[in-house]
Image 1 (cartoon, helix red, strand yellow):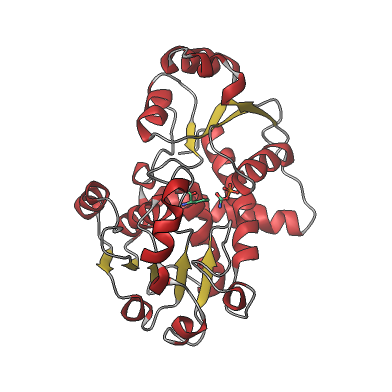
Image 2 (spheres, helix red, strand yellow):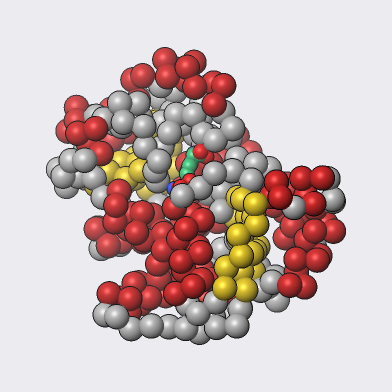
Length: 306
Ligand code: CP
Ligand code: NVA
């Protein structure tokens, strides 16, 4: 049976553990100069409908470093752009490739790809979720805090795709998660309901960022206007003004709080320059871990270990 990662609710707690363990192993190996080429002969397709620096490059590099071959597919240069049905494209790609990484707008389209392929389909971001981002982020939390248990995570800003994946992770792993979002920009109701149904996590939504960061071990923020919301940018700037992660807000958290951001960052908007570049920021290590986690995801899914 193939395993997809369309949302983090596709994974059981044990699957998370397998991925964390493998990512940490592969990171250690790479620091020691050891190579694992066990995906030699395998081919990964990457379909991207939205821009990407980190996710695309880290998946491509991960595949190359594991001995496999990545093929980047710009959706606009394929017959998808000329309305070939997704289910037809999916069935054909399934016969050429061993795995498929997709970044697109609609979660439904991603689901259709998964349904009509018998190869693993991996969500590299949709409007609704960014599961692989949060997998590598939890790895970073584990490195800095020793564990993800008994760690208070404060999400500050938009209740967006990355926030939704944190909510899913919290539901499966039992995380302590507080999300501070402006009124009207809270996480999606259905996402919350599904997580609460599944979950053991302690998930709280508030509109008070100061309250949210009290005793927080991790502060996480993301852009105020995600890809596809560019037209809302100006309006969002005024709505989100009080939600900037700046020095004053960070001072309200635990002394050794780490500040995370999936990047790209907008300095002076969701995060101040001095916090992004300051002593609590772990964003570059966080970004590096995308490579190690993506290696683990490919290793585990393409070899059908879960
Ligand atoms: N964090 C992240 O997904 O970055 P990219 O948009 O550059 O892939
Ligand atoms: N929420 C952001 C994440 C970018 C990695 C977006 O969707 O644009």
